[in-house]
Length: 286
Image (tube, rainbow, N blue to C red):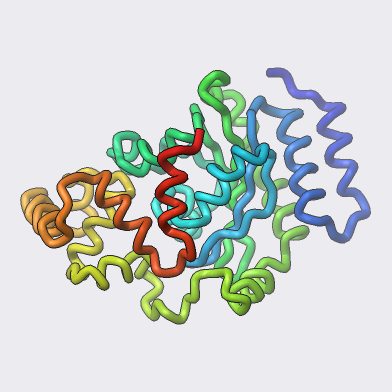
């Protein structure tokens, strides 16, 4: 599509002289700016800090879509999301989902049980480090009927990323306070329960189920979408050893499939108040 300069300038003009904006105001300004540059179907903006449940800053979903893209996502599946993992690594820039995903992501149970329900062809994110261990990810999504982002549009997004980053750091400068407030209110994962910052909240599930540290690491990578070969490379062990551990895990848990593994994972996330609702909804939404 061609750049709509008039719409772009009108959107940018909305920020002139404004020392602050609400989440909705900033989100709408971002949406209008991006609409002048590229074609997309949805916008969603999350803030991530460490292992905590992400904050939903802005989205353009209708109520039914919001359940899948936001409510269910925040309730547990975000832990397996390549965007969440990238945010935890504090990487910046414009990233395509398919380039961040593990080698078996698109055949993983997480993808089949959750991500495919979004009906997306592609998702691109602006990863902005906002300080205080916080990364803001502004996602542009295209549904299957729209298709993937062409190379020229991706190039435009890369060029506008510095401007987006500066705006995020200015208008969303109080996110640490908001994370702290929600933690204090009990609406966030309590980080003090996890003294090792490399341990995910989901790891507590596996410990309670008597899995070893190595077994926990392996099943976590399995659910993210890594193959046995990829897991072996990440952990520095042979593919055969990975497969032995996977068989032992399935035997310990009394399961025989990755479908059952994902269901068990979601049901037993300690910090989620309605885990059974999560699992049921994943099978019935959209």
